[in-house]
Image (cartoon, rainbow, N blue to C red; front, side, top):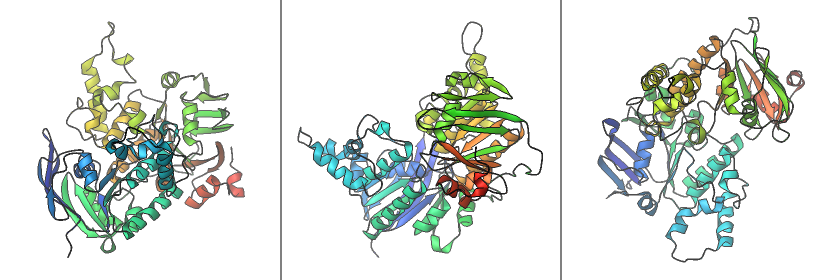
Amino acid sequence: MAEPVLTIHGVTKHFGAVKALTDVNFTLERGEVHALCGENGAGKSTLMNIIAGVLQPTSGEIRVDGAPVRIASPAVAQSLGIGLVHQEIALCPDATVAENMFMAATNRRRSPFMNYRALERDAQAVMNRLAAIDVRRKVADLPISSQQLVEIAKALTLDCRVLILDEPTAALTETEAQQLFSIIRDLKANGISIIYISHRMAEIFSLCDRVTVFRDGRYVCTDRTADITPDDVVRRMVGREITQLYPDKRDASAPAGKTILSVEGLSDATRFHDVGFELREGEILGIGGLIGSGRTEIAEGICGLRPRTAGSVSLHGVPQKIQSYSDAVKAGIVYLSEDRKGSGVFLEMSIAQNVSVLELKALTNSAGLLKRRAETALAEDFAKKLAVRMSGVEAPVKSLSGGNQQKVAIAKQLAVKPKVILMDEPTRGIDVGAKTEIHRLLRELAQAGIGIIVISSEMPELLGLSDRVLVVREGRIAGELGADEMSEEAVIRLASGLGNEQAAHHAA
């Protein structure tokens, strides 16, 4: 038998008193796609950062082709043929797509002159394998889904032998994801080995040869995907049975609750037009549609984050004058961004500072000084309610796993006691256990009288969580689906412009 291309043996990583990894093992064979699963905080990203040279292990051994190596930096990892596509976007926003894709090669070159024509030609050839994105565009001008594709294309330029993909489809449309799967299969056929981190079981069992499970920073098991089921993987990830991913919905036969939020004729003249709907007490309203359809822009228009040219927003029948996000927060409307790293949390600040940032006025004394004890108590209360895994509320948010960062972002919104919460991709990149906790929390908030609107690209989440679904197409409400009408087919038909008469009957 040939030596594995990559062997991890007894690797441990400590961050001060926190043990992120304890004596973990992992092997990657040549030409295989190997899934790595575990809840957020299980140690997956820590191990990938060690393999990619971003972090150094406290102890343990790494072998490449059977030979011990010390991966002292990302440059060393790249020289060994190891490429990492991070879950979080790590591009230079003011540089072009082409410049981002070939940044590593540019840093190594000795010539003082850059042949931009050749750079753009080579970059476009790689990018065309994934999507029709003009490589001359600045990254800052691209939506999150396109930036994710640039990250993947960047890795494909490195001529990798080992490619690590950390939640690569989290921000992709179904069409983009299928294109990526095709490329992964081609890479595998050419002998490239891939470590695939994902919480989406359908992807894992469609793409991967083997799956390794971590739990609480420790290795649990490795199995061939042909020999196990998705339920087996979930049980090993969480160490317990998860019998119900989505909480019970509102009784569809019960009388409709009072209207909390009313949106009428909302437009910004470019991305959304004549949007109108109502949100009622006790329900979770889902908003579906393809990425780029205008879902996020509608939410931003409601919250004053995007200028609008027409329309009105009312709370409990009272019209609201919302010209900025500050106005929205004062009125009781808050928004959880899909871009956790960019605008969801302040990574360098503490958990306590993040939770209190929208509520500073209430936490300030008459002299204008922040009441630290009150801030700490507020953060500890929400950290407990949301089961945030942390060393303490004074820890920086960047020290948390992605799922726990998302919980802090949610706590920040809840701290202002909102009347309506708009959540854009609330569980993106979060493990199944944390998803269940957040879904349960959203249902409890709805039952407590808070208006909940969820934008989600994950069809099971959209259908499993929502009492009603509005489908957006090209900036307009294409249709509304009630409890007895919701299905993947119905959502896709409306989102793609093939809405049937029954769905059209409910169009706003």
